[in-house]
Length: 430
Ligand SMILES: Nc1ncnc2c1ncn2[C@@H]1O[C@H](COP(=O)(O)OP(=O)(O)OP(=O)(O)O)[C@@H](O)[C@H]1O
Ligand SMILES: [Mg+2]
Image (cartoon, rainbow, N blue to C red; front, side, top):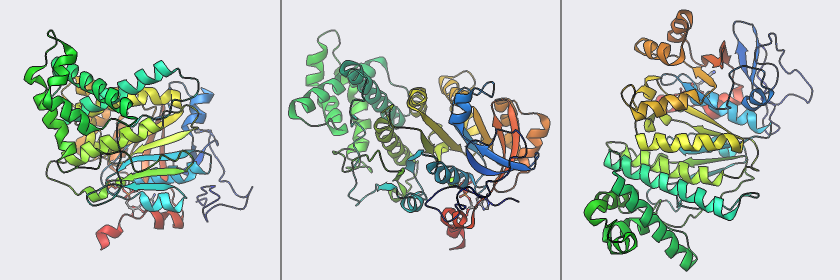
C-alpha cells in the first residue's frame, strides 16, 4: 500500500517536498484534494476535496460541499473526520468543531496550533450564543441587523422547543420576538450584548411585553412556558455558561477551533448536553458568518444526539443554507441512517427537515451499519443490493463513499502519528 501522506508542514508524515505523492490509479475523483486512503476497487489512491469538486462541476449532481458520515460505534468515523481536518489544514482550510461532547478534539486542536474552549461547571469559559459577529464587508447595516435578528430568533425558538419538547405556539413566537427586541434595545442603550437571562426575565415578568404588544397582542400567560424553558439555561444545570458575556474572542486566524463540552457530564435525558451543543454551535456559526473567512470545514461530531430535536434541525437547516454562500463545508457524523428517520414520521416536518439535510450532502460516507439498518440505507440512499450487502460487512476505517452518483469503497489510511493522536480505544483499555 502506498504510505499515507497528509502533506501538512506541521506533521511528521509530510514527505520531502515533491516526493512520493501516492499514484492515482483511476480517474476516481481525481488527484485534487487531500489523500484519504485506498480505493479498493480501482486499487489506487483516493483523494477528496469537496470545494474542488463543487467548483469544477465535473461530477453531475455534486451540488454542495457538505458530507454526511455514519457508522456504528468504533468504526473510525471520528478518525476519518480528524484526518480530513489535519490534512485539509495543510491545504489552507480552517477547521471548526462547534461541539465536542467527548473532548476528543482538544488534543488535536492543540497539536495543530489551534484553540479549544472548554465549558462546564466550575470552568471559567462563558459563551453568549446571542453574540453578534462584526458586520462583514459588503453587507449593509440594515441587512446585517435583520440577519442577526433572524439567527437569534431561530436559536431562541429551538432552545425553547427542545426544553418544552413541542413546537411553539404562534403567540409564543410573538412573545419571543418581542422579548428579543426589548432585550436588544436595552443592551444597545447600555452598550452591552443581550443575554438569555434578560430574555427569560422579560418573558417572566410580562408587563413590558404587554406594553409593547398593545391590547391586541396582549401576551398574558402565554409566555410562561417560554420563560420556564429559557430559565433552564439560566439557572438550571447549564447555569452561567451561556448567560454571560463571552470570555473568549473568536480567533479567525487559528487553523482550528473546537468547543469541548466533555465536562458537562451526562444527565439522564441528555437535554442539557443538547442545549449546550446548540448554544455552542450557534455561537460558532455566527462567528463564521464572514464570507471572506476562506474555505472552512465545520465538523458536527456526535450529531446523532441532536437529530431527534425538531427545533435544532430547523436551525441546522438554515445554517447549512447560509453556509454554501460562505465557503463552508459541513460534515455531519451520525451512528445510523435511521437517526435521520428518528426526526419524525414519514411526511412530518421533522422528517422533511432531516431528509432535506441529507439531500444537502452531495457526499455520503457509510461505514458499517447493523443489518437492521440496511432497509433505511436502501430507502434513503438508493443503494444497489450489492452496496447494501457491502455496508453490513465493512471493517474499521473502511467505507462506502457515495459522491453524487459515484460509488467507491475506500480504506482510510492513518499515519502512525495520526493513529496516536486519534486513538480513542485507550478509554476501553483503561
Ligand atoms: N483507518 C483506521 N486505521 C486504523 N485504526 C483506526 C482507523 N480508524 C479508526 N481507527 C482507530 O479505531 C478507534 C476508534 O475510532 P473512532 O474513535 O474514530 O471511531 P468512531 O466511529 O468515531 O467511534 P464512536 O462512534 O464511538 O465515536 C480509534 O482508536 C482509532 O485510532
Ligand atoms: Mg467518534
